[in-house]
Length: 492
Image 1 (tube, rainbow, N blue to C red):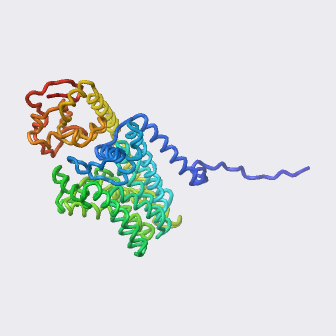
Image 2 (image 1 turned 45 degrees about the vertical axis):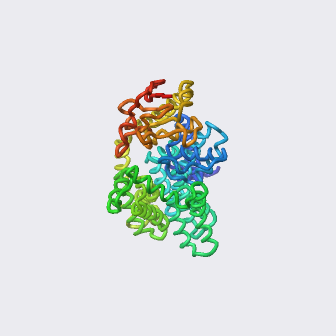
Image 3 (image 1 turned 90 degrees about the horizontal axis):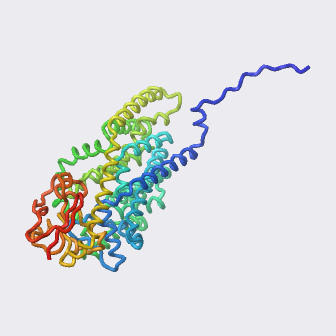
């Protein structure tokens, strides 16, 4: 007879143990796949159109494909970005599908940006820090909103985040880091500072000097060919900033920077990020070096832009905001860099729970997804309404008598794109001697109190100095068409 042996019952692993048992690459890739799926659904639900700057890039790309020089020097055009113009030229053969594909790329870039922030937090600290930082990017709707409107800032930030992540994983890596920074430098000149810093970090040589100079050289060459002035972008940006009252005295730059970062991150996350910077300096100084440099570079660039008298807007602090989100992630999950027996670990965990709960409560009570829904829906409807107005037979007939005029610069790129028109075929009445009062052709006006200050098409946004007569039909004009938000008058 066999003797029975007593054994302890086998304990099933708990849910947290099961989670830890899942390889990191599995949940990271699964999370990225879910993010891409959600972004694709949003892209299909909100068929929006590119913003003002990107709309001009598409126009310039089409001009290149038509064999003409891009109209960089047209009235109140934004600063050109060589890589964006080149990409738009590639999309131009697709016709009216080009704007939608442009937006699809920026939405995809948003997913790549989130992944890049995760990779940076993981490389600098731990996967948990990377995960929290990525979730914080997702919870800051500003980034998703920029992607949904086709801003080139999103692919730019994605390139910078991945360059920082790869450099953190292997210092002085070169190769892919150089490629990403050069491409970023062809999207935004702020990356030139990063190129210069990386050039110094990698020990200057003839090869690295030539690589670091690629982006500024191509930018200057593009300006030279298109306008005859290699410094056109710098001069034009400064002039436009003064015209649109976007400059700030250097003395106001610090307070404006704090206000802008608070607007993007919200004060609980901003405070958590500053706490995270202090904790990183105390417990992981060497590992935090690249993330700290990235954060500081954005602030330095912002200060230089303000000192140079260029446009000062909160989007220029987006790189700093990204770096701070990584440190906010470290404030919450940075205890994972400490040994389990470290005396600071348990107090840190307790404090992190309080911070995370407080931040979650603030976000839940201050999040307004309805605003995003309304903005994207309104932008789509207004763009479609404008396109319908300017493509009627009556509009085309009146257009034979003269150019199309619009109140100011706001309506120009969308009108030009729809009509496939040149810079001299769609004019702003704010640029004409008598504000278009006696202009022949067809004149478009916005109508309705809310439209006058609409952020996309409204001629009288806060700070506007345009004369009110740009919204007054001149003598001899007759109404030929109207819609809910636009009026079309004609004179021959």
